[in-house]
Length: 590
Image (cartoon, rainbow, N blue to C red):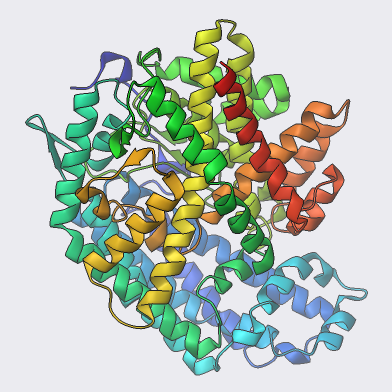
């Protein structure tokens, strides 16, 4: 039964992209993109090295324009699909668009391949006295992949086969998850509804939800194991051909972050397990009158927690007010998402689970997807995704090739938005007991963002390493999962057999291998950034907006320098983790 307070939640209107799946505008843009791509190839293929700087600038500008059309088409197709992954007609439409756009981009593939064959000295000469300098950050990122580039024919083959290979397996995963139904007390639910019950105040309901999830995941574990094995092997084969040493290396390159920096983060978090998650869950077990917590009680609300349903209007006002206390401009940018139909918040059968912010293309605007069910975590999710949306709006003027922020910094605005919202609520709360409950909730969110995501990263590393030796059975994958969970959550969490299947539903493992450390990176970075904000007298907001507006034009070192921060300094991560430890210290005293 839908709570009356959760009726009439906003749903997005995608007509700012295209009027409909069958619209003339969509057909015309597909045709134009295909024609422009062929003309582009006829004009420039095999000729890039002979161009001067200004001519290369014009070539990349034309490439960017075609990319804008492709991006608009695929953004629309994916958002329609995310709204209902169970509809076969929509699934067919999404796949057809992927195939058409993939064919178009095949004609454009030569640009980056030829760009990587230009000598460095020649390229530097091209920058002098031409507009090409504008694209230097993008060219630098393209050329970072130069050592791993294969022949033109092999690159074309890999590109064309992706649609019937990796992308098809991802689609199978998405549609399987979206189509799953879970029985809880005779009521049939989608995955996001059952996962929401793990935060219910009713302990018996949490247990039933967990058992239902475990049962259905277990019944489907062979399929999820096949998808995971296939994608891991596919990645391993391609990495071997490219000469990539470690499975996560290509993710680090695309994130524009050094592997050593990620290793330092991961090692710092793992070393802090005993003082963070192990200590907190031991405390929580005591608060709940237990020696150990069953895994389904990990995110359980404390007995004193307010479990009322928070209406959408209140959630909106809470987030926008918190944004406004930091900067009226930030609140004004965020309010656009509520004044326009840019958010899809309701829970529906077939809808993509979880939450995301999709930037679409610079000439349009982002869209947010949520599955809002009215608890405090959902309000924080709104604050998080709205942070992404605002970031995407601010970076859009950089254009299609330069607006995308590397994943290491893509989580900054989102986590900062959560932090602003939490701090505003905490400052408003004077009751010591309610402050304790709020602090505990924030610690749990931070543990989920830092400890849990680094545990996920460790799970992926172990899984991909093991897959190089042999296909992994569901039991083998389950053991890797359980080992990592026991290490990260500690002795105060009691595991049950069915928990070995809970790796199945994590979409990041399938969609974006090794993405997960970006969350921990973002949380620790924001902790350090927020400390600078608290100590700053003036000027922080302007620097913060400049950082977001930079998009993908600067790397993490350059973006953080104005704040006096350096993520390559090993002590940097200790500072971020120290904030979480400080909150737990405070909870122990309370």
